[in-house]
Length: 410
Ligand SMILES: Cc1ncc(COP(=O)(O)O)c(C=O)c1O
Image (tube, rainbow, N blue to C red):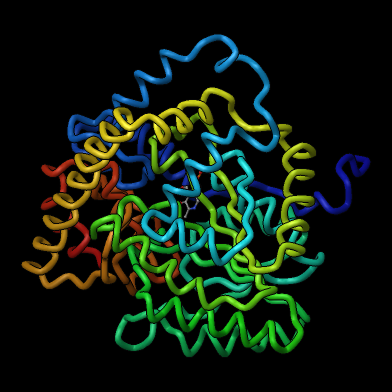
């Protein structure tokens, strides 16, 4: 057989254990009545349907033809870009506006934003630094961009964010390749549920500044996909951005917003990358390469998706309705997480500290944990030495039984 694909594409084989296990769980659920599927990273209601926001649904169905069918502008609408900016930074929005130059580029979900950022802000064969527990598609985005990943230990001995290892690996990598590109998914990390503190963020920013002062380009990709599902008030989930104010002039921060998670618009593929820097020149470069990649890779984003988000952010009535519904969504997660923690405590099951998001993780030494749980009709995502449990798609009734089965096999 002739080599039909390009050389660079020879390695490609999508081995997404998340998607595959999810399919297996769905098939098993059709066959047996007692299957627990804790694999799905979409927020679901207690009755099993996706947690759809009624206000999103209403605005979506009220769009006119041009808002639905026309091509979307590459740079997005102002309602969308400014709306996303204000939403993401919340009370810090004005402060960030004053201190930084910025640009918001609409992308096909958070995935499009990360994928484009990997491609544009690294030389081929360089590495992006990220913690050792991470959402596995990052690996696909990296290989597609001809780069690789390098990890540091997410936790120290006390299960706090391991700032010492972060610093060490960051400086090492920066010196080795003359560039530092860091990816952090915070708050409400997928898969662990970790939320870094403002002090952790100050240390991260100080490290980026240190690298910048070594005359090495420093780029932060901050994936905030689950920011609206932190267990604290939204004011607190945004306070981490106060640490940004200390960023040195030439450092570039790219904040990645996901319309899938914030609005449950999973199928619409809409998100954004927000470039921030104190240097206008850096932001000009960000916009230049970002615009280009949007056009070259997916042309533009979903027009209806972008319009729904833009309308909700600019209409106070819609926005309030959205906030009220978001409160219902986070309360659902909170109730499931509390029950999970309570049951785990009863059975003395150790879990990683959870402070928000769709997932709780449990450390394990059992190499066959996935198989053992499947035999007990439980589907979770195994990752290195943890299992990831999607509380986003569980219902309350399933939780005690799930914890009991995990404890049995852990
Ligand atoms: C950590 C993390 N980042 C980003 C995303 C991006 O999602 P989307 O491309 O649907 O916006 C996800 C989705 O599961 C995620 O878990």
